[in-house]
Length: 100
Image (cartoon, rainbow, N blue to C red; front, side):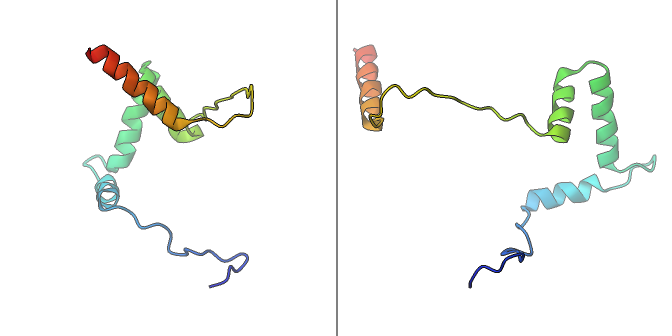
């Protein structure tokens, strides 16, 4: 099937996993005070963050702003290819020397 500009190749989207569907259903249940479980959880998390709980603050920030990207930079000294097999041999040699 050829690509059609402006039309999704997956209009139904990615299928949800069963655990996700179950968590969504439970989260929408209404509690005695009229709030849903999701609303209650959000209020608890905000309360903990306001009290100074750093993990709660990080969780809320990550959910709202997204997890910060971490970048790695490397300086190329020469253009030789990296030999992965050489690294495996070094690890084996190191393991052998510590086991002796």
